[in-house]
Length: 220
Image (cartoon, rainbow, N blue to C red):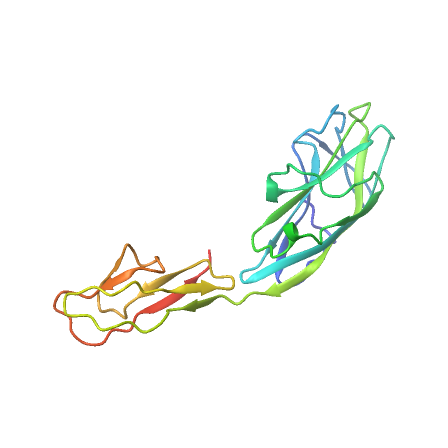
């Protein structure tokens, strides 16, 4: 991918512009150029692409994709813009040979917390040497901090020595995708495991006293 001149705001990382294996890089001044757009229909390997990744505890709410482009011959007349959210299956907006604004302010492109890739496909050239290029591009949107949270739930009823607690009833929110229970080193057992938010806890057989069970949020 080509990143020279790219500007990326805080809270995300971006791959720059790259291309599929079915097209060939060509030289160009202040443009990202390729040839090989001569498939008779959309070819899954003929595209320009961009990958945007939100940082930990961040989400992206996209607004639009704006680009300018051009072609060396009018036979490159077919275009499609798609995303990794559905495996590059459905078209988004109506891309053109010389650029446009594609609306991304739809529910599918809000609250993005994982890497997302967009691809611009082209096809129809009457010669493999015909070129299509991108002059400029901008992804517009908003980045929000999502604070991960964890709640260990209500206090539990006392249990007898050698007994087992009721279900712990933990919960996580924000950007947290799970949590892990701990008992402060007492050495008890969480069942079925310490990452189950509704696990039960059994102290060591000979243990007596007070135990503090802590739920620590996780984000992978």
